[in-house]
Length: 282
Image (cartoon, rainbow, N blue to C red; front, side):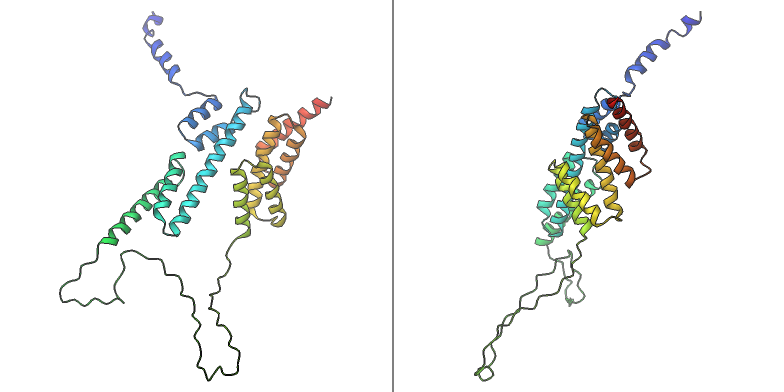
């Protein structure tokens, strides 16, 4: 009697089982990559355990996802530089490329809309002049421009020849233009980190690590360098471990824990690698 009463629940339970989201992190990551949800894909790939059958594929896919994410940020940087030079048409092309490759890139939608809007405003202001009421006497000092125009480059000084009597018997000296002194505001750490990212974008992991180690030697207390070095060494250790190279993986994870003692994931993987190394020697 009870079985007949609840027989109608069986199709619902079967349907619910068929629509349940996959629990395998590698499958979740593959589907996220197909939807171009790179952040979700990377999070799922980082959750693939070492003993998983597709662990090597997961690490290779994670590297590709990270490369695409770095490329997206590089395109945003390039677009912002073009905007700063008022080359909005070129900036829009670059920003749209970034949005196409990574739709969820933080801030990309706003940057695309802002660039499109500025192009429209500049195009309208080029053919439209403000109307002036009859009898009004507009003064340039109080008029507000519709669009802020970048300042014109300074005109170099022109050498003026002095009177003939003043230079009689003397060797004339050339007058050099006055160049404004520009203070250097380049942060060496930021410049070094950008160079590291360029190496990674070119798939030069070892060169990037060496460059970052040199940067850490020069700036040992910089939090940005320590954080990036810890993550990059952790990534390289995973590659070593996935390829069966236990010694370099152990060395990298020990350095990661020196930089970040609270990194529990690195500690667990280091323990597993050390245990496996002891077993292989025995």
